[in-house]
Length: 77
Image 1 (cartoon, rainbow, N blue to C red):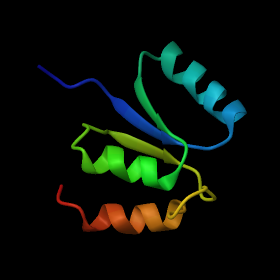
Image 2 (cartoon, helix red, strand yellow; image 1 turned 180 degrees about the vertical axis):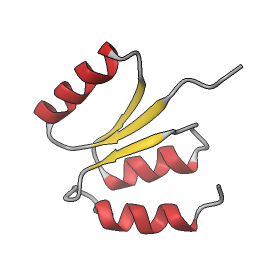
Image 3 (cartoon, rainbow, N blue to C red; image 1 turned 30 degrees about the vertical axis):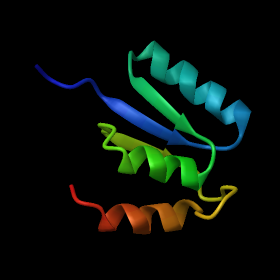
Image 4 (cartoon, rainbow, N blue to C red; image 1 turned 60 degrees about the vertical axis):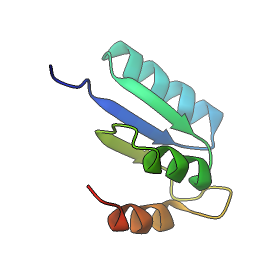
């Protein structure tokens, strides 16, 4: 059985989240959300099956978009 396409949306702007959520739902894409870099990395490290990441560059918390990408590169595939 093929896993559904799953996207992690890392965004702190509620208006953008609503627009992305609408687009994902209309295409039957499963989406998970995080509003800070720390939340995003916790979800990524949890082993959540993720096909793609929508990543804001400027985020509250310890990690911005660049730091999240750098951290993701160190994780096992």
